Image (cartoon, rainbow, N blue to C red; front, side):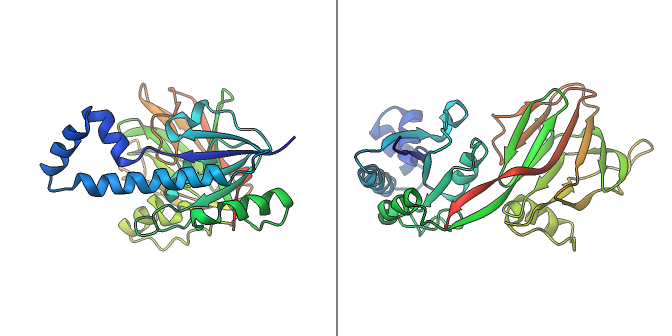
Length: 296
């Protein structure tokens, strides 16, 4: 069977504004009230749509093809042999990675290098045809990026490319018992973040900087994770000794919830797609067996 190319995007600013305000002129009014230009937003929209058309046109005619928006990823069924093309910002690759199950090849295309760094979307859209041909023929080179896995004691799981968050849905104080690196501690904090090497330049980097930590964060291909406890609060019943550390490949971070309501586990900042964490429920976070295979 011929491969299937799946192109993943997110709505453009113009599409989101049009959905919110109803008409083009209402969008213009909204932007002008904020000192912004409709023409600039439309130009970026047309640039994205042009890249989309060119990428779809680059898919060989004998291949199957599909296009999916970010909001629909949790309902889209990826196939093991899919070639996944991400056309957008770096964060969209993380959004896609958590829903892949068979280490499908992922091609990251940067439609706007002036706005997106291109760490996970390093290729220009014009290279789409050559990159797809390289993957299909086995010539492609891959960069493997470690992922994190969170598992509840009822069998539910989620995966993340950047980081896993465990805490209260509103980020208010959460109580739990944390176990890591052979130690155990009852804590009250605004949540626990467990980051991969890819996520080490994001939320984890901010937490490390904020607390003036000397913890050495993992690299993207390191089979290890780093964890940080956010704003731990010392009291008669809670401590603040176990607040950061590195988890090697076979190590676990375990957390037992003492939250009566509102406990959540989510990955890569997608709060709407979370696992509920009930009182007394246990969650384990570890290095995932699978990794992101990003076309280099």
